[in-house]
Image: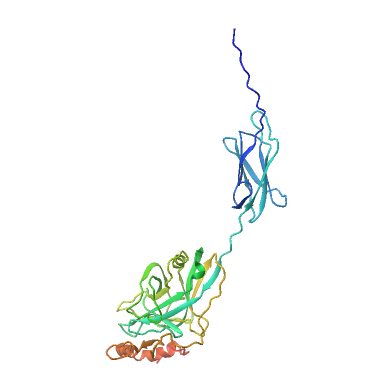
Length: 373
């Protein structure tokens, strides 16, 4: 005789939704996120309906995975930002023919729209220029960079700039550029002549800066610029805007690296450098074209401020002596019994005739380059 046997109880348990993605009441959901429902057992004939806050169904496609337990609905278009959507999973049937008793309903809210990139002009804090022959010029209307003189060795000039970057802390920087407005030019130099902007990595002060105590810089992220429109013959252009892309440098400042400003210098600073000298409007200019650092990113707008253009008081706390280029030679500095400004003229030799003319141009004269004596 055969023994007794048992019959499995029929499956009468309807499938349920055991998980969703996005989760119920989720916020900041990316607008391109697909909607998923995970069922408690393999099912068929299930569907997901997604509706916006007005009850309008979102067009899309649904697909079941290979386990027949995860149904994914992919909207045809990205969802709207900052919008609440309601999803409904229903009609799921298991292998025994049991159908979900009630639809599973949940809602979620999408992320806010990203802020459009904004551009601010950083406030300039200080600017100055100096050369390797003792001239400094922190309070004139022009800053200079390059190599100046009718013959070698020429005066090598550099400009230092510093901007207020406090508004950038922790911000995502898309693009940044330094802009200087060219006001006077001397010489076209060579094919590779130009000016480069570098990050300054050490502290400095316009009141005490000299050629001998210049701070260190780094070539990491340096940017090169040349005459906009080129330089033809011996007629360099002027009254044009120069720009240097300094995005990498500004990003480092935004991430917390110390901001010691920028240095603008000639590409060729050797003893045989050709004449390639460019003057730019300083922060003290009355032309309204002072140094600008324009930064684009996730920022709040901030108006750029500049020192009062009518404040002509020296930045030094001691007597100063006039320099032919608008700079100053400090009376406290001596070399062979001469002030630096005077010594500069004596050492210039055959540049003597050029310096007075250059002084007129640097002092704001409208004299054209081709009308120099």
